[in-house]
Length: 275
Image 1 (cartoon, rainbow, N blue to C red):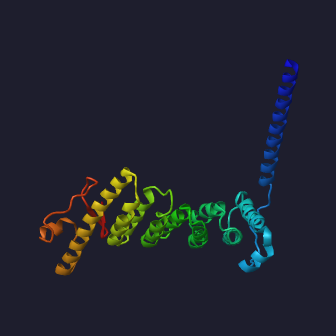
Image 2: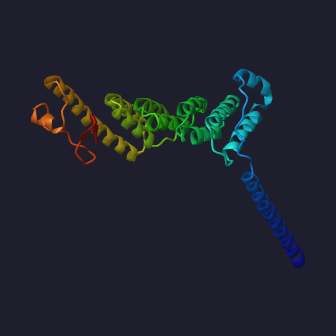
Image 3: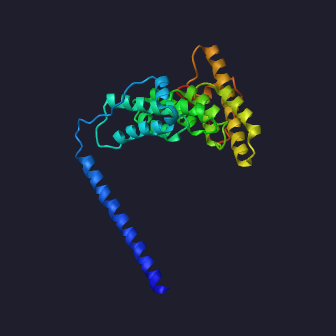
């Protein structure tokens, strides 16, 4: 029995060594192949209407979607400089893959990583992310990507806020997304919308720590709204906006500035109230 056990152990060790050696050799050969690929290699695709593509794929839609996605990843994983035509081809490949399988999250992830994050095809990336967002209606991630892209790349706080607000109603979003949505809404000049949104969210939150965070954010936003209305009154009275928030008090429009629950004074930067 002892000899038999030693034999099995030796056999398993030999198998592990053979598999390890095979993997290392394959890895070396793949990298050597990538290093020697001609620079003329480009991403390629064929423009096919979504309807025709779905009919052609038939019952193999999932496999076809995986193949198309793999085709795009293979190019992106290479060592070429990416041209505009390559990015257009990758966009087409990802769109075709999503047409066949809009539920596969990996396509959404790669769209964000390679199309949006390079900052050169952001609107096209958002178009594709919306497909995933609609179909994966239980998942918050695509909506978060869309909101981030609107904010970070396109400087559109209102569109970012709208998507984050909608996304925050999905399961397991935690407190970050609704708080960020409200913040962007306020930065976009929609303070009342931000307040209404958080008040709507409040009854659905059970965790006391998150409710406490929302309470603080609501108190801050209500202070911001009070200041915004005072600024509108100031501009109407003096035909120019105030240069600082102190002018709202010195002019008598406000008795005093509201307290900021985040324990720092409200400030005015480029016409936006910061807290």
